[in-house]
Length: 204
Image (cartoon, rainbow, N blue to C red):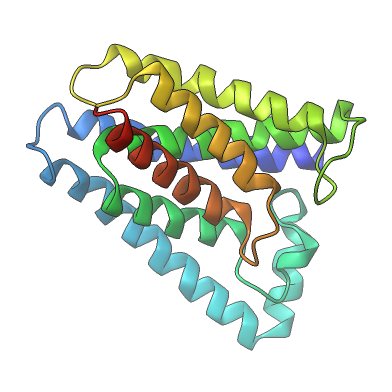
């Protein structure tokens, strides 16, 4: 139940790709990323203040972990929270990648990653890498494809099914690999790089 609660909370991250998508309807390219980057900057600033405060005050740190068990992991007690990493990765993804790639990458992280973990923990049997399961990985990849599919209906994003499939596969593989940084940071950047490379190789 705690895992589901934490992952559902993470899906609040839908706010950022939706805002980015909406701003593209009224603002010119590049300028359309300014509103969502400004909002992310506010959230990141607040989270970094909170992180610094709890690192310097063990009582505050203890209180936060006792009262927000459904939204934190024990391994985050002495390091940056996955929420902070999620926000930083979202900002970098929007700043660095073309609009279509950034939108898909953020949706992959917001939906694919939670689905992979929930399915893996609840029904996974076949272990592969880092304690992850084949069932969870496949479910995450399918969820990435499903949540990214509506983007194919929007003109001007530079995406097609091949690019989206490569991105979904890259997101699933990135989550499996033993990077020193949490996959909330690596998944959107890894899938974004894969899709950008695919667009260039496929001539999109």
